[in-house]
Length: 263
Image (cartoon, rainbow, N blue to C red):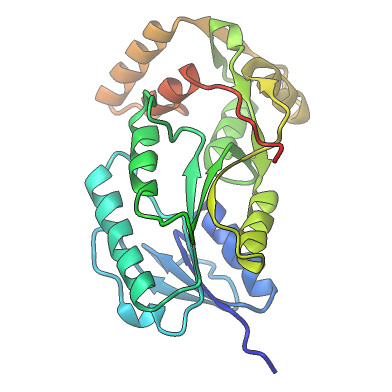
């Protein structure tokens, strides 16, 4: 009987990482989840290993491993993200893992205005796309991440800011479709850099209108200029007032553009 594949997932306690860990564990793969903290409700059949991008990885984790999905990321910490990724890739090469997948973002672009986009692009360089795979994903839908934060914001009846009338193009992908893509890449040995999302776009305003109606809440918007919104967020961040949108989100939104994803 063939031994099931072993897959390492960094950030396995996060939104996308935990969903991926659950999926592959249910498929009877051996799943090693690298996490900062062991989840309060750990998934059955997932081996959790404490891991921090700031610290060396336990090399024993990579022994007999077959694949790596790198989801872990620390906001606004380029040096740590890069050094952590470099260390992961060194061990992956040393132990001859068959496939490394990096979860990047639409924001990764040489003209990116946000630090997030610039960092993702820089981290991509550590993956050898002739054999590895980099996925630049659109807005990921599901019970977590930025999507859940905005859903909670809307359910409380709070207003959603619209920049330039909310005409920016949104392209989404459901978290389960993203995970099926991980599996396809591994099973079919696909390599390269890909943008992945629904090919059809929807405007920012229409997206949040539909989401509000789905949640049973009347959509509430407030039109603001880009500079006024950035100023307001900067003040809130300085005063350490928690708000559902960060400066990085606004910078990314301002430069959002439709991507060709049909292929």
